[in-house]
Image (cartoon, rainbow, N blue to C red; front, side, top):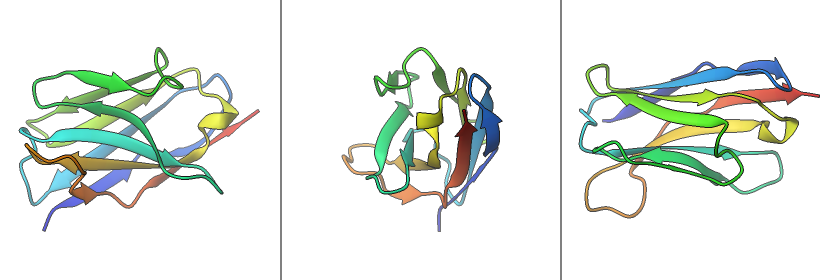
Length: 118
């Protein structure tokens, strides 16, 4: 049973920074694509960033230049560094993993709340 546990969320003022962590257990994810998603109140869940097993990064346009995804395969952990936060970044942030050759994400964390005050 794969488990993802996110941490690092909280309340921050606009312009501030947060670093989210997502620790995996039950699976060595070095071959998986790892991603971050978010869901704001009343909105659908949306893609934020992902990082492939060979280090290629993709970002949503709304976070490009402000957020950075990284991973430490030795620690089975993926990170999301969020800088220059805006009130519209307020959401529950989820990490997820996708095994090779799959299109959909196979396992998800429980989410961590990020609130950005203006």
